[in-house]
Image (cartoon, helix red, strand yellow):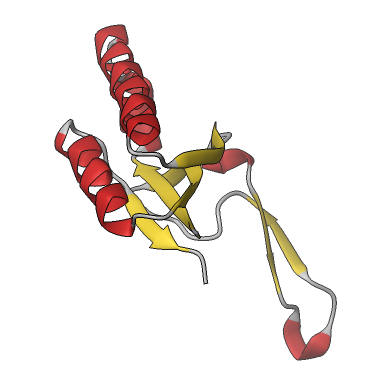
Length: 116
């Protein structure tokens, strides 16, 4: 049994400006993803959206071994931010990849990674 992390990157500013119909379409896509995972025997261990990246607190090593450098906001400035995740457990990595590809084909952006 392996564990996988599905990261959900998205451009936060663009998503916030979409009409309600697009948000509903996204919700239906996630509901179908849940059903597909269950049908394939893949277990969802945890899933959640994340607060906006502007509310993140980033921490880096301080200079010359000093105190950590703490900043408000995301670790990096980029067009897309990680806005949510799924932590999954599966015995069939190929089938999980197939289901993730179907999820992406419905318009979702994702990154699938096996936990080391």
